[in-house]
Length: 135
Image (cartoon, rainbow, N blue to C red; front, side, top):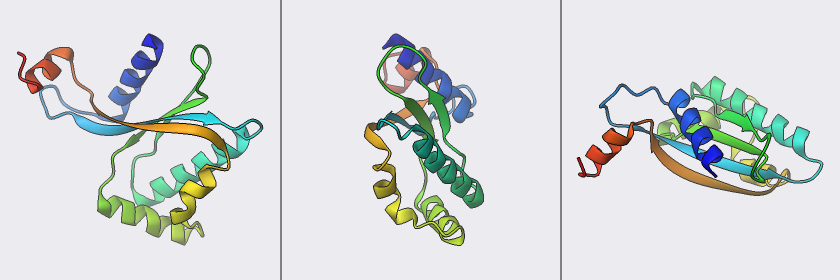
């Protein structure tokens, strides 16, 4: 679990560029367990989501592939998007012939389970203590 926490923290640091002492950003960490035999299809679906994000001007998620330890297959760190960004994503998908509203249904063909966790960061321990009024 410590490896996972370090991986998530490092990934969040590289996704959200926040100057020291600034309000930390927000991200979504998704952990996927891919269904047997669906690895390539899952990755192709994720690549399509990245291409739609790029077309919409939204940062792509950062994918981490499991190599050792816990049972997850992939960890993806995505930015938290605004309603305007969500609308831009849907519009970019339509231009590419993709019904993004069906995205959740499509994704579920390739996974056995997943979790999404909202996080705040990057920040130092001292910054977090200050933010919660303990320093």
